[in-house]
Image (cartoon, rainbow, N blue to C red):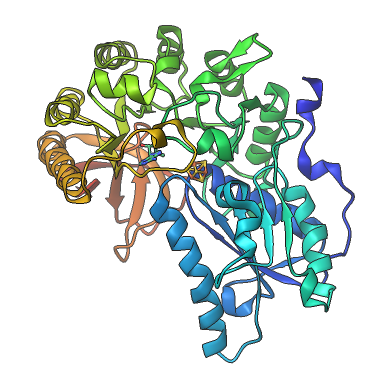
Length: 457
Ligand code: 5AD
Ligand code: SF4
């Protein structure tokens, strides 16, 4: 396991293979991809590539893609066609297009076929090969060579995204492990991202220290199942939180995403007692029906999930929750669906991310008939969203008159306002031109618009 400590960025000497080549990266999907895109940027920069500001300014466009639902993949395929069209319409020469991320891993050489074929396909564990492949591809004049693929899993190394490439903000993503060992029957991730492999605590610590040295106040620890983190069966997620909390200068720690099964009492106790760890749990329930949870292989029952939520509320002051929900899983009856709505009423989430079930090729659930009609999935989705809005309106109204404190995160879309985030992941707006990103701000809540609260000072 010692070689897990290798970092991919350190594995090759800088070169000038990319000198004069401008690359634009477009990122889709989850935060893991956002982090990976920064890591790709770092690897390319080391080899002399420059970053382009848009597709018109680029010699190469890389799409860092998601496979989690069919629609996400369709969007990428049409985006490839759109990029080529937009370049043609602007009288620009053809651009080299590469696919990175989960679609690259899932479809490999398939992406070199068809009308929207691409020049380069690089999966999630092969970005260290990208600079060399790209340099060769751009410089080779023979079109028959315009087909390169690097896919396949390796658990020998992890990416480290350089702080210098982050968008200016006080909060930073830090991937703590990759892959997933669960086998939720609907999910493509174990296939696209491979088995779970941990970054060492030392590597995580040194990455965060470097971020803090370059001005970071806050980190979000990232992984498919951060709560399952376990370094050499010796240091679990709670212990990692403790280690990271001890880093001088770091002020806040968030994490995404947890699996309810690994949210142990001692993990919640650690979250509640460590001052720097933010009281916000994103814990996907997926369904409230035990029959569906069983068929999804989620490894918990509705009652256990609700007990966990109650315990979290008892040991983590001001904790808030968010979740993911899938509607229309094969065989989901009206009664199953009502059980999901019941969980929403009981937990009162701050935010939910809900999706229509999408059959993914090769996953275990693909063997079950996708028997809920698209119209019924749409109805269920609309009902979930309407109920969530109703619940949220009651919860949000209760906040009026309270004084909140948070950290200024970014300029709000509303002119002249800052967007502030509380430790428990709620957003509010303040107007104050003396302040800047990273400053603490307090205000009295006067109302809200969707999930953003409004204030007076
Ligand atoms: N269909 C619909 N939604 C899915 N998700 C994962 N796989 C699928 C699928 N096949 C959702 C889950 C997960 C989120 C990232 O995407 O809710 O938590
Ligand atoms: Fe999408 Fe999952 Fe891949 Fe993230 S890990 S990009 S959510 S398929």
